[in-house]
Length: 128
Image (cartoon, rainbow, N blue to C red; front, top):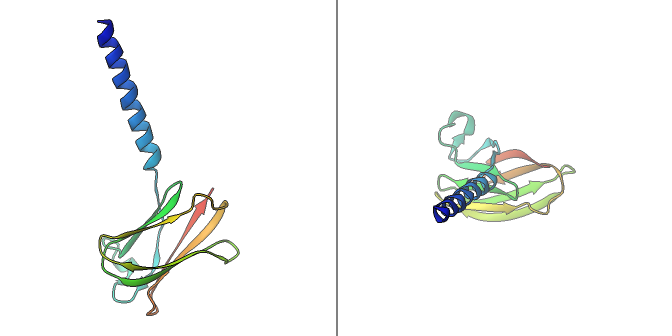
């Protein structure tokens, strides 16, 4: 009986730790993107299928590409409009891109995604 009680207690602790860790890691905030990319139409007219979804968690901003978008420029600006992050990606449906924000200062940041044809998506996120 004592052995059974120990096993049950250890199992309970393991399940509790797994659930707690999962909740912490998966805490994400949606970064609302406004604008349009050429060929995808206005985001406001296609709420069920936006071309890109953006989420912020405690260490990064995650971009998920839902359709093929080709070459995109991704920039992040701080509150003084200085570029703090810049890269180019080939955005393919099902692909993703991670912007590591772990050592960034507290404040408001603007995410700008452009397609080189005049299209753009823009969103704001905050680091506390």
